[in-house]
Image 1 (cartoon, rainbow, N blue to C red):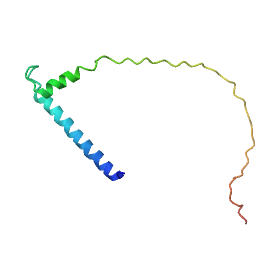
Image 2 (cartoon, one colour; image 1 turned 135 degrees about the vertical axis):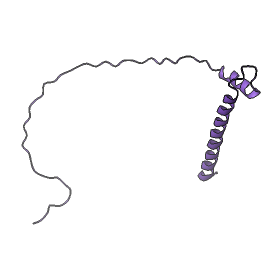
Image 3 (cartoon, rainbow, N blue to C red; image 1 turned 60 degrees about the horizontal axis):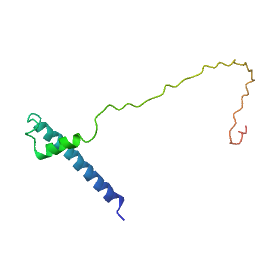
Image 4 (cartoon, rainbow, N blue to C red; image 1 turned 135 degrees about the horizontal axis):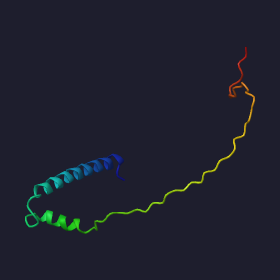
Length: 95
């Protein structure tokens, strides 16, 4: 089995490579921003094709509005005598 420290190291290196590649891809697309559709390199050409694969439309998620019923109950007055006792599990203090 692979140790968790090796897995963690591989995951950190892969995430670092992914971050570097994302920065490189964004810098590369900015480099070709004014070249037009015909002046792009092969990487940009395939990227434009991949961007058109997924449909781009607004996602409309229907939500329901909650309804509430207002109910009122009469408050009853309850008088209780206060008992000054502390209920703990410790034995009582002997004086």
